[in-house]
Length: 146
Image (cartoon, rainbow, N blue to C red; front, side, top):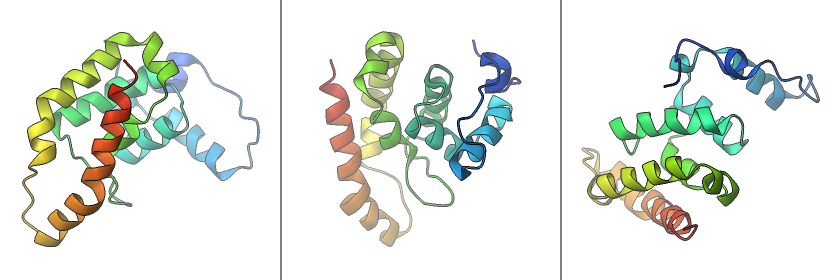
């Protein structure tokens, strides 16, 4: 079990950055100092995209997605799920248990993904036309890793 009171720096040790003046590097350094329980969906998505600390980040994402499979990032409105499903095969091949947990989560939540409860018709239309195809494509690519 991951200690949510600790930061990634505490769990893995501080990692020296290659360019401390780079905005992305600064953002990642800020995120790595936060307690795991305080990481936002945006923080998790950034760490996923940058392939940082995936062995800690993926379980946190799975926990959030189990509660709300279609959870969105506040600033962008993008969803966490496709970002998780786009993790490269190398990670999943050495973390088969996390791959299986992700596949199980997807199987258990497919009805929610295909038939979301959204009150706003514009939001539902946008989801069906833009986001659902991306989620399904990402999921198919994820399943093809087996």
